[in-house]
Length: 503
Image (tube, rainbow, N blue to C red; front, side):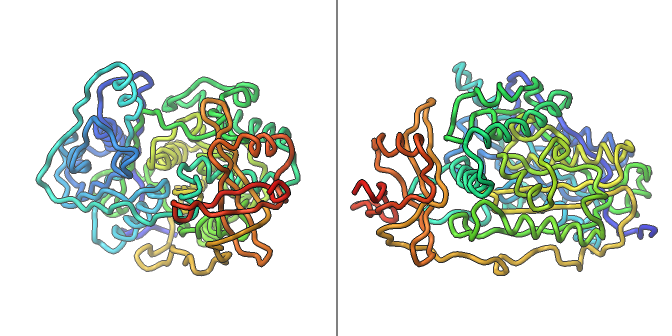
């Protein structure tokens, strides 16, 4: 059907990478990506039409443990505006989460449809490689900037962990994802060696895609042996299986309406439409009935496909969020598809690069470039934040879409999901998943997810220095074994375990 003037479209995209360290700040890379997106749209008047600049929040501004000593801008959207010569009315700094690029795009498409905005520049960047290189070499970076213009800072957003999880060692995303991964291995009935081989085979194909992507941070193709032989992070993950955040990467999208684009002389060959979208937030990982799956991820992808009136057989291009292998297989398992390289346009977060919350802006930019150059007709982008917690998906095409984005519902209510009850004071339980965490290649802690006999759920951890329990867990399969639990005398919510037969 023909597009109306208020139909929203993506009309430009840009990306940049610095494989070697420089002194540039994230806003410098974001600005370069924005300039590329403006150039890609084909109009010399687009810059003056921008009324909104929105930036995806950097890791450094997301949470204190990621803070940088290089300083930051107090208004990143204005820093970008200043660099590219824009004068936006609105400046937005997003919440935290890898879902934000896709979620923001849907929000802005609703605003564009309703006439609340005319042209939006959506961008983000990370320069973590620059920061780490400077620290190693004793170089003092000064990225601090101060602006007086107003900015809407949306803060952190929903926290996606509970006190019991955090108090028992689940303090890094890799440990949460390990619990998901381990539960999936157990569901499939595979031993550790077979499961590792399958993951490495899938990821080697992702690495091959990244090796030919000019915007990849890590373009060297890795073999299965390379991936398996890297330093272990947990008993299921090596360093080459997980998202790599030591990157210098920026990406940007230019969003407007068909009517504004035509007035600005942007060719219709640049138009990419959104045909279906959905988003939603999962329950806490430890309370998911089946920790190997994400019901919200499944619902989000299904809803996006249904809204687009299509199915997996008609999707030409895929980019499924790939911070950890189970993020990919959560989607491929649900859809009944083999988790091969067709699920990445970029090469994925372990090989293309994991630029903080902004990865999916790169996926969307790559999607726009491929669709507008005739390499595929329909694409699906899945974005993920938290610990497979915040999901957003979109189906895209160069064919016009007839959806009124200002009225259509895209949010799936978390209350629709089933949840287990948490046991705050367990004395015993049965292991259903676990993570054995490593430091410098050595196992140092075990975290176990357990069910009580009554079906309630809890997380607990091994005693500090308890190497015997770790050795026993590595020597034979611990899933299904009984544990005895005792609370830490001084730390609320902290629970230590030993195998029940040893107590």
